[in-house]
Image (cartoon, rainbow over all chains, first blue to last red; front, top):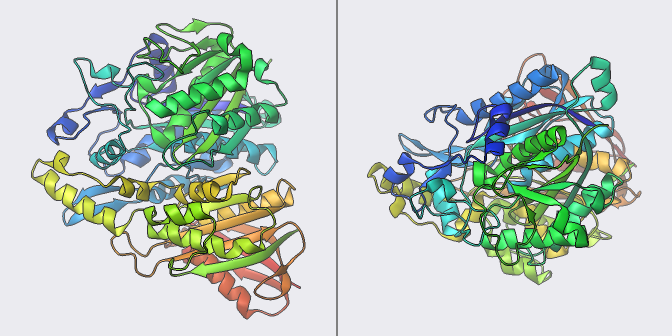
Length: 377
Length: 244
């Protein structure tokens, strides 16, 4: 199973190349947003995608289609020739002339899905949705139900509704200083929550045989997928990270590998107090004593938390890491917190000839998903 | 071979079993579509052999949220038009009402489920995707049992007319509780329509109608053609069943 196309639209770039370069440079797309300041919201920072105008009613569709177009362009495939397994985030409200206008995530999916072949499936797994969509596509293509599939996710949730909603859960990073770009600090001692962002990420998955027959570019292999449920609490993971660790282990077992054969981890780490602690514990349990030499990085300090798109954008970065061997740094990580000890990539990218990357997402409610990417020999 | 073992439809979430206690405790935090889906699931679970290892596919409500959340949004927009958006506060419980995988997570927490779990989104026609996923997984031998559950609400501002549904499937030939005879799901066929059809987004309604049609039929093969408005508007969908 291979990846033959990637597309990314994020707060740090409107193409996958721009996205990757920004990650390597350690640049953050988190900023203080005038519209949030003007609305007097409790949180005023976020990762805005400037490439698509804010006032477009179909902004969610346009954003997703940019990533899909890019991925299909690289893979040299048409929509009608591939399946579509995608996550479009959560329902929201928009301001209307006569009160709130409900905007269902399903209507965005329906607008995107029409030109595609079978299957057309919408995944709903909160923050794990993008990774889950890629995993579903992986299983689907591997089972021979379809030759190729576009998979990933998109999200337009950087709105007053979600800022207020997640602020009520005390999950968001406040703008607490002169440098709003440092609001989100995964694994850091001073971390205090995540920054909501918009974005879209997509992959084209197909069998190696189909890709070779078409002469398509092979960017990386998908070697395994795993999922698990925390079975613990709707709002927080178990402190020992046991649910997340089961997910990582299942992805590796699916690939027929051992944890020590994984070279690096693209972490979910959003910058929340409890989430990062549990994830660090999970990664240490997964690797055992080898954790001290396995580089881990989180993208959330750079691009924020793009919800349904988060796992898909991280998958794009994981593919690039497999291709280049380079692990991007965790932006805004200065001093790892007690309990967050890992082999962090701090300050600059790590050139390690990394070939196998585990990309993980841990969703609200305890739904976990992880995809194992590998450089094809 | 995939067999329907039990099914339940709920229009009220008033009566819940005492166990699992965790579900009873969390239940009032959920919005009505999630409550109805979970209530329907509790109705079919006595027929399950091992809830902890079964595959669970949960359909997100086609309209998430709740009347409470809608009223909050009204107040927030009114405040926003006066430049005071930030003055509004949200009850944290209501934030849960937009989470799309809430029923799935609540079920897994209550029943200790850690097998294949998937939340399918609330776009038109996704109920048949959920059904197809379950059929594929049981046919491939990945699980022995599977649960499909869904909850709908008629409108986000008014939850009247809401309903939930749950269907329990087995890879083992067992009688369908409602008919006392085995009901085999043979295939789900798709044919692309020449032109898109208008649709009505739903999660539970289509599955409830399928169960209603099944109850009216005698033995033998059934080709249940899903009404166009209950598909994604792109494909014609036919569910092939066989009642022993």
